[in-house]
Image (cartoon, rainbow, N blue to C red; front, side, top):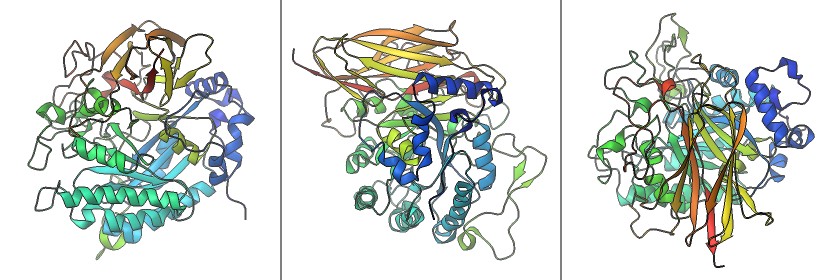
Length: 560
């Protein structure tokens, strides 16, 4: 029997009349048309099984200069198949569709009950959703407890062994199941634990290379929440399997955690309410344990840890997601266990029941606030994964933008250009052109406002290759080099920014915000004069402090 096929999202389907689309869908269709991909070109992959569609755009590290459509997704979601969550699979899938997601990954916490029962039970629901031709790409994944560190998203595309990969990996390499985590009697960062994490990533990579699964990707989750993901560990993970360990959450979930009046007086966006502990890496400052504009300190600090990794010349992608467990102001609660049942012997918690009264929670629904946009040329599971691996990724909060397209071109007449995640080879002193095409928001976000982008910042860092000290978290030659005031601009517009190549290779990345909460960056105003700042504990309305970030473009210089 032929494989079931996914239809295109309604906004991308030429058979869907324009009159039936809402304003955001119309905007996305406009982006598709401007990319020259509307119709048969983009639809081609959707008419093939996932494995065949992927062959049209094989994975690559880096990027070139293709016309792209950005698919919106969330790689970190929890259902009743996680021991600490409460929503059914169908509730989350419906929410993702409501908020415009094109793809989702269900990443349940590792647990004995999950490995024995939950993974297979959820897989049956995922197969049914795919067979019903839902207009969304639904991945099954795992939230891995990294030996000696925090958590990671692990996922693969539909295909043979997609569940077996997760359960075999969970049983052999999960830090929680092995007792190799921060709750163990000794410090988690032992040589044994760190070596086991590296071994785990190499094992996953081997499953991809051997054809056991078609592909697999790994992303570190909420890396600075506890301060136990040291810089050398993150570099070790990346270097162990650079084609699958591709990045980290630039912003964590739980973004509603500090909504005024919702939680306690010390709540911080992202549930970053921790202090350095005996398990933390001692080189992080106390300021690293809070979020900045909702983003992790490692990402938000210009010249910080993310930049230190990029300054080695290696792509490391950032994402943003919901990490949904319990939605703020939601009225559902976990149901009651039947006698003799628990998570370990069922693999899931009881389905929720509606109380009609608000329940504790600090999350948003998938796509409601946090979004990860992945650039593809065709529609399909492995195309999303290939786009992530290539670094064609930007993220936003609060539906700040409908779209952004970033291109860097060499001097006129050379025909050379690249986009997010790509590399451009240029001559020393060559004059380059950075073009940034912004499509502003066209409809009210779930908070009831039409977001307005206030500024676009260009961040430049020098690339000097691998560092001698693998615990170095600073990139001293990275700073904001250009800011465009766009507070009065709406619709679709293009910023044209001149860039001159110097003697050293470098990278460029973009950032911007609604301009409502900015100040000097953590490393000083001379490096970042207009960056994100921490909010007052317990008073962090996320809708009034929204940002976007893009992945970098690398520029490699050579002699005249």
